[in-house]
Image (tube, rainbow, N blue to C red; front, side, top):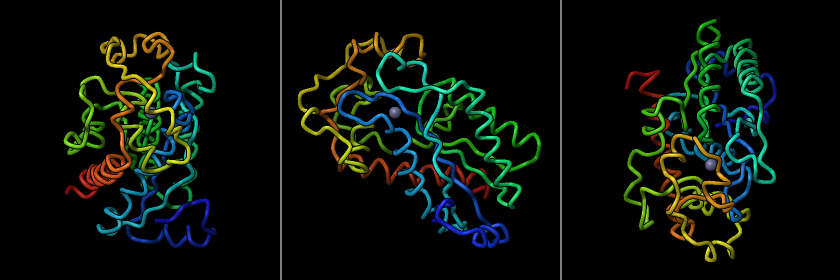
Length: 261
Ligand SMILES: [Zn+2]
């Protein structure tokens, strides 16, 4: 796995002529995830999943290049929390299309958008960018991770992970809860407020429908707490398993789409 920003240009020329190369573009956001987790969690998680997916793709003959992460996204629901930033959808769409066109100009025609931020407007925008690039025959593009097609999201993130959760209410887990806290504890423990986790009450008593359908904002849904579910149920060990399995899942989604596995 190579990072585009870390290699010199002749290497890109070589990749363009390699039989099978693909570019993963991690996409995240700057958004609150509760008082215990960093605002950049979705970006960091997308990078972790890209790294976990890469070996499976390489086993299948791909050269994997990871492009610099898009750290900004569309995040209307958490705007009442300090630090949450949002782009207008057209800004994100243009950014992704411009990156896809530039890669393609240099012979990199396979682009995997790996999105770590669940937000309908954000996911729809990424799908629109994919549509533009495919329509103009710039590149083959896939939306993975949190995608506007719920079947893709399930195949990437939910397949094969249920048994690892320890939360007493897995049906109430969500943003900033067991899953995301576990991934943070495994991937970037220095950015987690460990001492705070034990002090956080579980947040199971919220309007799940409004949360899933995005009809209410995070502040009012969580009484200003910013997380949903049980951060206390999280562990680094769970995070390690989640990242490993989701990485494999994401690679499978890509291989199914492009290699008809
Ligand atoms: Zn998140």
